[in-house]
Amino acid sequence: MDFLKMGDISPKDLQDILWVSLRIKQELKGGTHEEMLKGKTLLMLFSKNSTRTRVSFETGMTQLGGHAVFLDMEKSQGSRGESFFDMGGSVGGMADLVMARLHSHQDIEKLAEGSAAPVINGLTDLEHPCQALSDMLTLWELGKLKKGGKLAFVGDCRNNVANSLMLACAMSGLEVSMVGPEGYAPKSEYVEMAQGFGCKVEHCADVEKGLEGVDAVYTDTWVSMGDEIEAKKRVEVLSPYQVDEKLMYYAKQDAVFMHCLPAHRGQEVTNEVIDGKQSVVFLQAENRMHAQKGLMCWLLGKA
Ligand code: CP
Ligand code: NVA
Image (cartoon, rainbow, N blue to C red; front, side, top):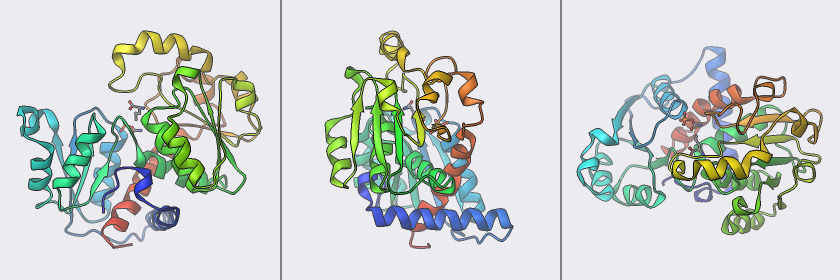
């Protein structure tokens, strides 16, 4: 089984992965962690930059008693025209798991088609499901993953992080408020999928209305990797959606501020908010490692 999109797993699978992740995290903190992936190898293929994804997967694999191999797409035969299917067919016969961060989602599908080993999406233009897993773990630990809870995503509501997050929230029973301008409204197919889980999803261009009564305010860059050519236009259109202290005031008083990072301080979020008391961004970053350890054990039937 692959984990390319949030929709690849069921709400029950998501719950199971979160339970394993939490147990693994607690054991690690308690100093008694088990080497559940001893002797296993994870191949990590990157064609885009990364800080958290690379470090969390590699460190997590080491802690589980396994090994991670880093392959820069530029230095691989992929940059000389080898197909994703052939790469998958080759590396999937050596590694036990493959994690890839690629530009186009279609490419990771081809990689997975060729690979005998499970393939994990470490970010494509369409989804960032590992981020969403970690975010659900974070909300759960903070007591905010409960029925009737509500998360607002502010900014580019149709980017990879927004797509996976919207589905993960819906699968966890949270309501979602997508707050952004018309041109950056959530993708209708994702709204429909989220609604399919019985989730209330609203798109709202008005920040005050969109943030009313929310338990978490989430934002991401206005210019995702691959969107650089539109940077000027995006910054202009999305500027009214900067998460500053005034905007946070519209949410519940005890709402948390979330960001997948990297942040563009002074653009989508101000220093006051990201460094403020409500911010949980570094807990989210740390949880990348715990949630992905849970995911890898679950995918290999070691949970
Ligand atoms: N959030 C996230 O995926 O971070 P990196 O781009 O640093 O991996
Ligand atoms: N939406 C961002 C997420 C980075 C982790 C991007 O794709 O660049």
